[in-house]
Length: 252
Length: 225
Image (cartoon, rainbow over all chains, first blue to last red; front, side):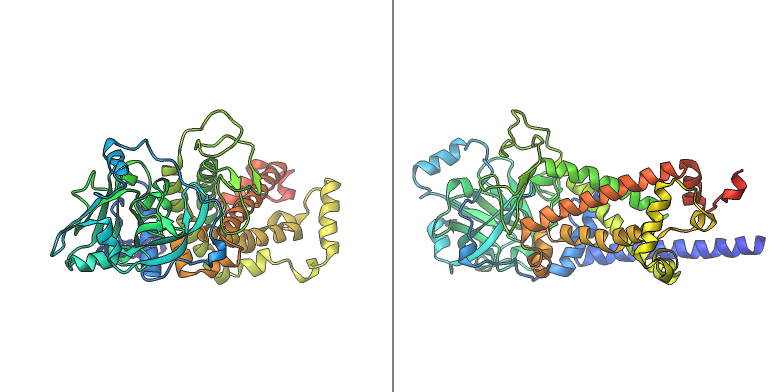
């Protein structure tokens, strides 16, 4: 009896050591390959990290589903936003002719781009779905320039790991990793369904991330910044969403 | 062990799933659907968002943030536990020995006998105290190999990133909103199983079943007298 329990003790001990070593190796590898989301702390951290790591291994380059023109929703839907700020109303009064997008941070040539500057980049279109975390969705055509074009134009530095983007409205900002930032479907969106992007859908400028839920696609973008760490932004959780209790990574 | 971890994660998924549904208690069929389009059906409950027409004059508190975090964490626990259970079940031949109905029971007669015995309120015979009857076996197999895989699949199909890697996962279900509606119904079937399952345990004697489920020891019918 005592022999068996000693053997059991040794086996259990070895298994526990192997487990701890395995976890340590896994966490080291995960850090090295950028598989840890910024909101990895707290009781929901393990689940969130598993989700983000699995998605990064599975979906780094995959393309969001695109739909035929016949599937464009007759009735798109936009969650109402807070009443516009004085800043926004001023821009709206001048038909957004002075709207600027600042591009800074870890880039070789920081820039301030007007909407017509952005239209000077190769303009693409995509028919993709907006999926809200609440459960509803619609399909629309989105017209804009892939974010990667702008990042290349300003000379994104190789040490940049995240792109942080800010709305003109206060406390509305998000960030994405480079897999999503360099993704060909991540658009600085200027138009929708053959027209200008309506204000309720984020006009004049929205960063659309079609592989993630709608809340990652921030409306009224005025600044994007490249960084190697999200610690210095807000509470260091990656974006305004985790500060409000929502996951940073929203591809689920 | 895997059973009790599954119980905990299932309840976490159920509660958080209900919280998430409350933010948009309308269901659709096809690829898209929103408050501006007709619903397939609407749950008669108030919503946690004021943009959803529910007929109620008030809005419930928004619990989606933590509910979503917990829903996905519990889903991971459930899936990983399920994998351990499936591998262990195959290795120990648990599925073929205890769950697949024996050849003699693979006839309608066997099912009829079970119902007839239940209706007569006949006490379980010696064999039944140790193993499952034909109806139980089919129910458990359905839950393990049909309903749980379906609920995981329809849930994954709701992830825009997963769909970008595996578009067929959502396309063969008829679109995103169909996947969401199916996810809701499969969860409903699992809840139905849970209710019957728990009711059975009470009928067959709560404490003796609990002892058997936790320790594996069964008190024989002959010992009970």
